[in-house]
Image (cartoon, rainbow, N blue to C red; front, side, top):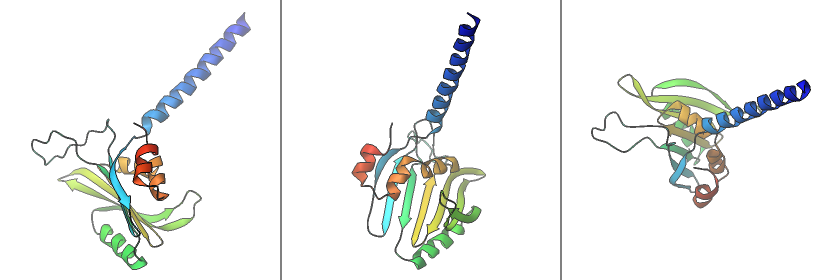
Length: 175
């Protein structure tokens, strides 16, 4: 009897740990809704609505009742010179971090920077930007946390794999 009770306690503990882990993962994964965008030979621009639990209102928009602050992915790949120019011009803003960009295997891809946008002393937006050969990438969001969540999301993977807008709308996110 004691052994059965011990097994039940262990089972309940393991089950509660697994459920807590799943709940934490589901609630820590931001869910963005695709609004519009697409890609041409040298240019890509995709806009996503921020997660519903994020409340992003413009401080300087008196009377605004709708949320603002969508998340945007931008890519330009015309030439190495253009990529360098875009990286340099983005570095001239309120740069808070500059370094190297690495892939998941630790291989260097290029340079990376992070800028923030302020309204007085409050940060109202952030842009992560980096280079990969001839490609200049940028993710702009109402917060650095949201930009980083989008960078690690399934949506961003779909954009990198050059999926069509219709494919992204249907298969690359969940609400």
